[in-house]
Image (cartoon, rainbow, N blue to C red; front, top):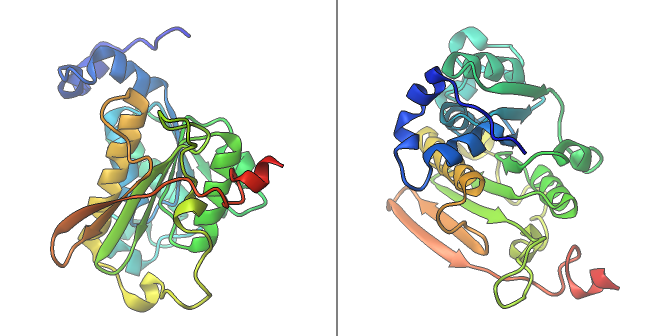
Length: 263
């Protein structure tokens, strides 16, 4: 594949990336060539999309069926007061165009579910899930596993957040498969067991931290530097300002890549 040519304006725009040994011209060209699908243009998706656009990711897909409401603006920094009532995909596309006109945005004003997830994730280089409900998280993680798409997945609590990367179609150096989302969380909690942010609240700045870390993980996946969070769950505690990492492994009983799935 021919490497995309960076214009003089792009060379100046991305100069602070290009001088990094771990990125350089080839890494910036990889970012320009990349196609990233983001699920959700809300609390996590806002900083994620802003930083991916600023970094020069060439094509960004956005899946969201919601409209901007006033209570969103405490944390969803992609949108403004003038966007109230506007589809989040439209508001996001306009904001990203202001950030970087070199980025193509493809909106999907629909809800991802088990019926359309595989069609939506197919054909993207990386998928990033910033959704706010368990049904979507399981649908997108299952679809990415089956379609062999790398997935960066994050979740917000009230004062806590988690982040991991899933590449279950690949194996560890010892030959053991990488874990799936269902290896980490075998099944969703019962309905009502975990209150939504509407019910329990969420610290706005925490969404910015977690969404920015998602962007960093996506950029690392595209450029290829550092050690991805595969088999590791990053846990953020905003009360104690503590970051911890939990290691997890492939569960042979998981329904997607487990031993039963092979039969």
